[in-house]
Image (cartoon, rainbow, N blue to C red; front, side):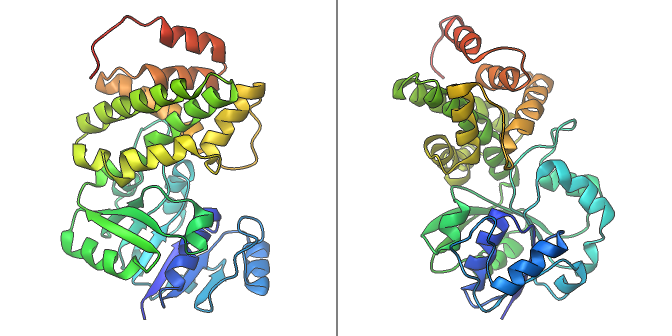
Length: 323
């Protein structure tokens, strides 16, 4: 039986923990809130995020990082904006196992992906990424889900793929770490855009146009950074984009929908696309890539323009060939 450590006891971390534990693995789920973790251990569920899902017997929770010792793989389900200080404060290299990043986003100020943050900090462990079209609630309940797992070392990636897959969670292996991370991060910005379209009642034709042109934008930038086209057309690229831009289960889509309907910015959950939009525009400028949809989303989120003004900006752009 493998021992899998998971850092991050939010919805997605808990969902992965449940799915992997059901595959007959010993899973230890870590969260920083001692009181919350005690409640989860006592009641056998994460009542805050997944109140209708009971933990498998092989899943335990803790607020002590020492309990992750002996892990054969460490899954990091940690927001991009908080990852750097967490890795600086905690020496995880002592675990001597592959570190698998499962959260989506770019670091503001640097535009770095999560594996790039780890490399920037000198983390000397095998690095991998899991991303793709999967909602925490469905994963936790054993609904069929297919995701991408990326690792530069094909042998280590293959071992992780075999170890973490189950009858309900199917992982597809690639070595394209850049493509998998860029697809997962950038789609959140376009999910906010599609939510705005639906909330503002602009029609399904407008949403289809945004989804399609958004995919063209993210593909241009990701390929400039070294991503492979087939990765972007796969689960962690177009697959994740399609799911996130069409389902109210997506936090980014729901945030955009409320923004389009009422102009409200309030949210009680993590909306990765807000910070990613700022990082994305800066990264696009640095790389000389034109991304008009991402730019107007960033401007709306920064209160530099209104939804109606943003729409006028996009529709007034010069006519051009598709591509």
